[in-house]
Image (cartoon, rainbow, N blue to C red):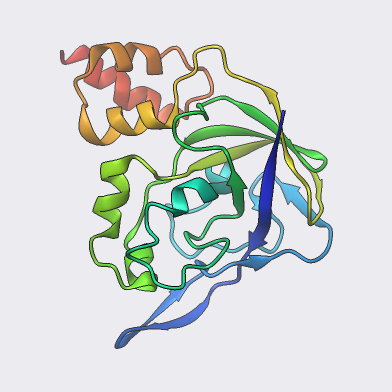
Length: 213
């Protein structure tokens, strides 16, 4: 199964004026226009400013176009792609139908879902919506991250091809529910711990939460 990618984007860190202040960020991303290599840390040339952004388990960020509709009334003139600083803007891969461990082909590369994207205050600053982080978390519409299982070249216009659904199907919606809203949900904790693709830090946290019940 192939999912449409509206744009594949990368960004350089730069100073951006937001309101009455200037922030240094790589949030503003633009479409790749030539073949770009995908390595274990993401698209070559895509930069990160903050320590918690990027890394092998957060190499690629995805946000789905279907979820843009949730924010149109709050963000006038919303961009058609990369509005949430994502590398991949897809259509049809929302929190309900993408799960930790699902594996996809992107160009010559292979990527695997690792966790939800933790929305940060940069989103609020860029779009001038102070409460948008709380709003995103309330709806679990965070987007998600991938690790790179196989490196390779990515081309403008590539689709995202599903290779394998993880058998547990611990969705991004369930992950966010457990992480942000219902931390003592035993059924979700037990389900999460069945997912071999879950990053170690989350496994340890969920294991600890389960042991305290």
